[in-house]
Amino acid sequence: MYQSAGRLSTMNKPERTLVCIVCPLGCQVHAFRAGEELIMEGHQCPKGAEYISLELTNPVRMLTTTISVAGEPPQRLAVRTTGPIPKEYLLPAMEMVKKINVKPPVKRGQVIVQNLFNTKIDVVASCDI
Image (cartoon, rainbow, N blue to C red):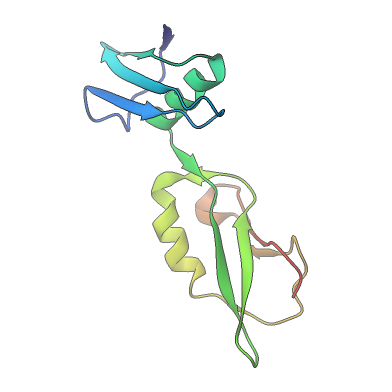
């Protein structure tokens, strides 16, 4: 059993069962609070415990999407974040990014949005266009 003293800000239920996605085993991990401690049962490795702990205390996600490219015919440019952003920023980030229209040429890795929501994470082009 793994115990973590991390904050439980997103764990608003007294207990949860999640599937770990770190490796192919797909362990079902049962997590619950014991005072301020997070108790986890069912994971088979430390990586799973770390993943579940972060998922319950500070969930983050990579953002991958497309944006408009000016010109004819209309095109889309694949973009992504340079790192994971807090999960609660995903929808606002999508709303912001869908309004962007770039003009070619754009090079792979070119910054489209710098320091997204003050996270120190950029949105960059995933390919050349």
